[in-house]
Image (cartoon, rainbow, N blue to C red):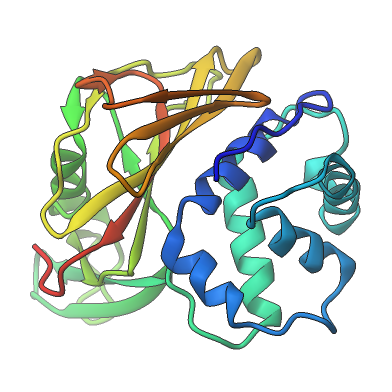
Amino acid sequence: MSIGLPNFGNTCYINSILQCLRYQRHFVKLLKYYDYKNDSVFHKNFIDLLFSGVSHDILRNFITLLSKENKEFELWKQCDAHELFLFLIDDFYEKHNFHNPFKGEIQSTIVCNNCKFKSETKQDFLTLSLKIEDETTLESLIEDYEKEEEIEYKCEKCKSTKASKNIKIHRYPEILVCHLKRFTNDGYKINSEISFKQLRYYRLTAVCNHSGSTDSGHYTAVGRKTNGGWVYLNDNNIMESNKLPEKSNMPYILFLEKYKRKLF
């Protein structure tokens, strides 16, 4: 069931992430089988907000507790939705030892240009942070993410400082979360459009959108209904539609659910 969430003052980033998580049915289903009676009030509120019948009091209490759990998310402060998602999922699974459907693994390979010495490391990830410049597709951004690049790197064998680096997604998660790097270090926002072309083996389930500028922006969400339609969620306002636009310059975080085993 789709419900609106009130904005208590610069809390649209919280609403948008909660709405996107509510449309991750695999994640929500896992939580339904979890006994959280002994959890903290903060985690109880978090889980309650992912199910239907949310009260304004629970949301208000959650926002207050969030600001105490992490000072980055102070009351009335305009914060980043991606940082909130990472905190909520990291914090939750740090305290709960069961399957995390958002967790994947990347493998980084560095090869010395001189002696060809190879160094490999593996690392878990919750989101893929993808560089966006021009109008593109999500598939192209993932391909660019895995492209080889030349880097400065001191080889432990021959001490040469030139190397090539390649990142591959070694294990894909059940829920793939892609973060588009729209905000630059010097305060600008990249408004390039991305098309909603279907990825192989993944189905788009929700989008966290950002409109406006870096300093004065607004977050909203879009969720996929079970019948294939879409729900646009702008704080308290809800609007249903049969389809998404072919492309948009607002997607900031995309949530995709695996629906086949074989990947790419």
